[in-house]
Every structure is written in structure tokens, then in C-alpha cells.
Amino acid sequence: MRVEIKKEAYEKLKRHFPWIYQNEILKAPKCDSGSVVDFVYKGEFIAVGFFNPKSKIAGRVLSFKKVLIDRGFFEERIKKAAKKREIFKKITNSYRLIHSEADFLPGLIVDRYGDNLVVSFTTAGMDNFKGVIVEILIDILAPKGIYEKGDKIRQKEGLEVISQTLYGEVDDEFVIKENGKKFLTYLKEGQKTGFFLDQRKNRKIVGKYGGEKTLDLFANAGGFGIYANASFTKFVEISPLACSLIERNCELNNLDNYEIVREDVFKFLEKEKEKYDLIIVDPPAFAKTKAAKKGAIRGWKYLIVNSLKLLEDGGYLALFSCSYSVSEKDLLDLALSSSLIEGCELEVVEFLKQDTDHPYILSIPNSLYLRGVLLRRIDEA
Image 1 (tube, rainbow, N blue to C red):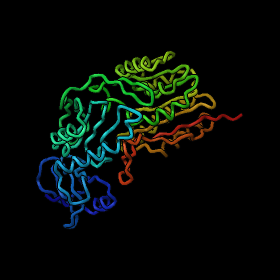
Image 2: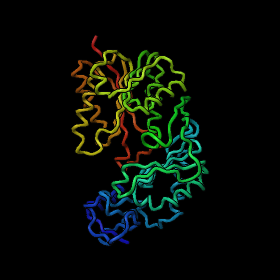
Image 3: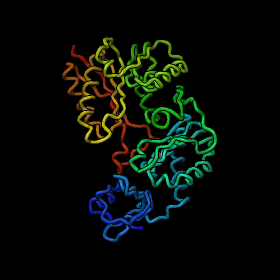
Image 4: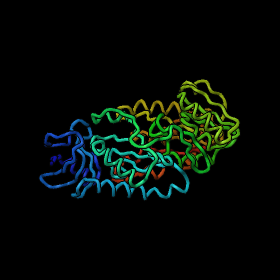
């Protein structure tokens, strides 16, 4: 089957951007969601990929070469992704094995937790190949079990959100080991596919700056605060499940002097008076669309201004945005304007991004989705 694309899509595909939006389709045959098609421009083959007439992102490129999309195609791609991650076995038992478009497998996420695989199929095209993908994962990796975690993004593809065991037995609880730290995670519950593996490198970097008192905001499972290993750590997290994980992870890592505050971070900052020498601000995605950016910027401004009020002179502030529409420049601009309000200077110590098992591909700008900056507060003498 052939799908005719408009010039704007052709120009993007020439630069190897892998998405084609619904309004960039000129002509398409009637077909099932997620069908494999050739994308053509003025009769010329441009790429092969998935086509879903039900989705805003109607086309997702699998290859810019004219290749057969069969078991052998997926096997080669999965083997290549797995080989690239071999280096992570030296530092952790848990890492992302396949990262969707950034591994040229749009809609397939695979995380490895020891002998467990946690997977998500987020596009109709990849969902159509679910049985084949599972067979390949079993043949190549010999896991104990494979668990599918349903992602709400499936609804945009016209798919049902399902969580289920696809093969074998999967651990309910699993202890992640990374850089000498331990973190309990529930593989079948919680956010993402179990744990924020993409922050692994950043936890180690930021943790070096832990001193007397650390404040971990939007703490999730407590990773940043535990890495900081401060004399006292305060974790702020609204989720009861996450708070229970923080408690158990502090025990696993022999962290003695800490406090867990189960509260909305914005409300917490209204009344907090204590001072800290390391503050981590790692909120969930405020702006999942461009339209939501304005509100996200207001929220960020509040968080940074009020965090600076609690930061000691010489203290460190780590900011992270997992919203593609809130850029690194946005974070820096917000930090600057907030520092002017607070009457201090901010020194950039480190620029941060997702760890390399979550690849950033230059031709896919939105594959750089996690941006961070570590800042140091400087007050005038």
C-alpha cells in the first residue's frame, strides 16, 4: 500500500524526522490501523512505516530504505538495541533496552529489570506485531517473564489500555542496583515502566553535592535524596505508593536521618521555612502540549522562586523538565528571572539530560525530552 504525503512532510522526512501528521497526508487507501505502508511523494518512495488514520500522528517511519517489514527486520533492530546497552551491565541490573523512535522502533518500549522485561506497545503498528516482538525478546534475552504495562497514550492510537503478563512470571517487587545504591520498585504498579531509569546518571552527578540538608521535591521513590546521603534529607511526595517506596528505599540504603512529607509540593512550599544546601526540583510533565506551556511556565516560576528562598548561600539547586515544550533555555530564563526576584546570582554547574540508554537522536529533536541544570546560589558579600 502507498500513502501520498504533502510537501511539508516530504521536507521533514528528507531530514529523517520520523513522524507524519494527519494534515500532511495527501491521499491514503482504506486500511487497518497500524498497517505497514510505503510513504511516497509525487510517486517517489520516501520511507516505509506504520500508518494509522485514527491518530494525529498518522505516519511513523520504520526505515528510509525500501525493506521488508517482517520478523527478521524486528529481530535485527532489537539485537542492535540490546548490544548497544551491554555497557550498562557494569553499573546496574536495570536499564532501558528499547526506546521507541530513538531505537527506530516507534511505539516499542522495553525496560530490563534483571530477568524481568517490562514492555509497552504505544502505537497501533507495533501492537500489531506484539506476538512477533514477544517471541524475539524470548529468543534473544531468555527472560523469566514479560509484563505489558498499559500506557494511556495508546488511546490516541485507538487502542485499549491493557496491563498483563505476556510470558512467564514477573516479579511483583524488584530491587534495582545502580552505582552502589538499591531501590525497590513495583514492576506492575507506579509510573512509567516501574522506575525513572532515565535519571540514573543525574542522580549520581547531583548526589555529589549533598551536604548537611537536602530537600527532594516531587521525590517519587527518593532516588535523588538517597544519592545525596546528606546529614538530613526531607522528601516531599504526594503519592502514597511513592511515599511507601521512599521509606523502604531509605532502609535499603541505611539512610537514618530523614523525613517524608506526603503533601502537594506547591502547598508545602507555601509554609516551609527551613534552609537547605541542596534542593532537587523534578516535577512530572507540566506541559504535555504546546498549549499547556504558559501554565507550566507559571508553575515553574513559583517552584524556582520559592526553592531559592530555602537555599543557602553556596547551596545547589537541581532543576529538571521532562516536558519537551519546556526547553533548557526556558529553565535558564526562569532561573535567571527568579534569581533577580530573590536578589542572588546563580552559577551554572552542570547541564543534564537523560542517561544514554534513552538515546537522543539529532534528527528527532523530541528524543531529547529530559533537560536539567544544576545551579549554585551566590549571594553578594
